[in-house]
Image 1: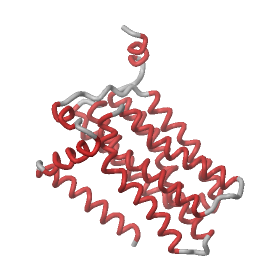
Image 2 (image 1 turned 90 degrees about the vertical axis):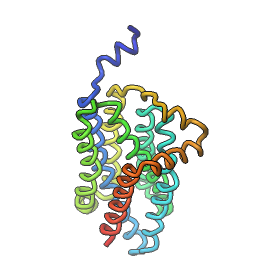
Image 3 (image 1 turned 180 degrees about the horizontal axis):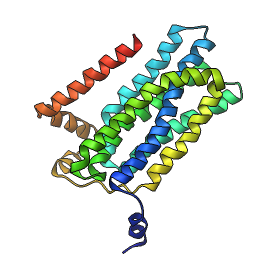
Image 4 (image 1 turned 45 degrees about the vertical axis):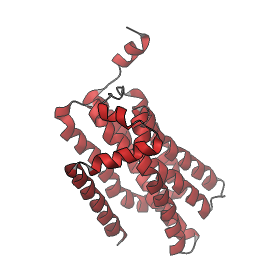
Length: 251
């Protein structure tokens, strides 16, 4: 047995490994959600309640997200799952660290938040497919329902507590304190990912057939879904549910 195998044998995997990753992401996710809702408050204060400045910030975020999310699955299928999961954390960590330095030195401007929104949008595009795909290689099939329930909480919980805590903490410690808190929480999420043993991606016939080039591979995934009505129906349900939720939250 190799040294790497000996090391990996002591690392948690399966449901235990998923729980450790989930816990780290939950802590970091709530803090990131607080930051996400605190930034509009800072923009409104900085610009004397300018709706256009806030709209620009959201546009940069969603444009970056929509521009990358279609191809994020290609990267996730091609490369190591743990690496792709770390992409999300490191992109958000970098954006948070830069904003904290600028805010601490009194040099933070609204256009800085536009640039950070691009980083956040790109990172968020990797989040859902990365954590959804790791379930099938980390836990047994009989625990898929339990694992998917945990992942759902990972997305819903920060959305629930983020806005409330953002308003309270923004008044108590300001944006500077919120960014510092968010930066600290990345220790938990990145540390959990580095600690857990995530098995390599199993090879499948569909996966081998799809490796024909970046754009072709992205189109292969779309065609794969369109040929399967059941899968297409699930995707459409998720799409319209998220779209409805987004408009409801804005309202």
